Length: 315
Image 1 (cartoon, helix red, strand yellow):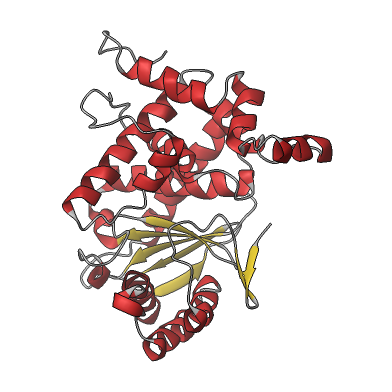
Image 2: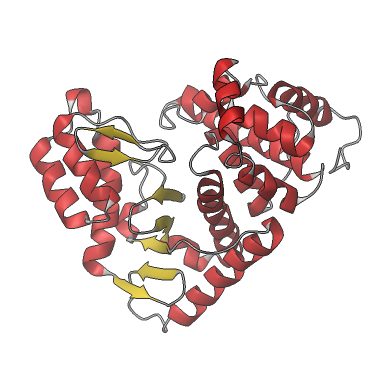
């Protein structure tokens, strides 16, 4: 269920945004409605909070607002909306952009057994937003009210192979959130997204530490602009790729899709039992689909990552 603060409703699937203070609740409500002009005006009026606590969120709103002001927002029918800033001297990019987005999202739906139903806005951010102080400038997913929103840097339009992988990665976040109804934890979101992206199933031998579920979740939220935080986030993605690769090897991507569905199929008695014994939703879902639980997954994936056979891509 959504959590409510003073009349503003925030989905539990919206990870990575700080809990807002009273003035910023209105900012975030406007942002989640994708009313970027109002969100920008309110943010400037409200200030950045104690020690600039909301500066990162402000930069995100600023980048999306600049795109809305100077770009084109187009409804392409079915489930797809596109937003981008036409580049001077470039040929009409729209047909190619739409083709790439549809192809890569179609690949994810086919491989994971997903059914399109929610509208998705793919926004290619204004080039001014592709700067170090804008969080998530490599790409991010936001669960907004009118639609799911994927934001990607415009520079990816000049790097087609990277663009395709980024589209699959961020669209997989939308899939995971909708199929799990927001119950999928962040580390599993990233594990699924890394599989969808076809990210390399990198070995964990060089990781400073193999993190447990709680520690891994926290690592994704570290400040990427600090040396220690940057290392922690990079290692978190590496470990997520290993976890996703292990699960992929246990039955393929449709089974991973079924794992997302398993978060939402518990009856009342099962839900009450999970609460009584403090069982995490992902532990129950893993046992239902794969026959082993959360701790077993992390132990098995680590052992697989340390395999002596460097060519092995499946357990």
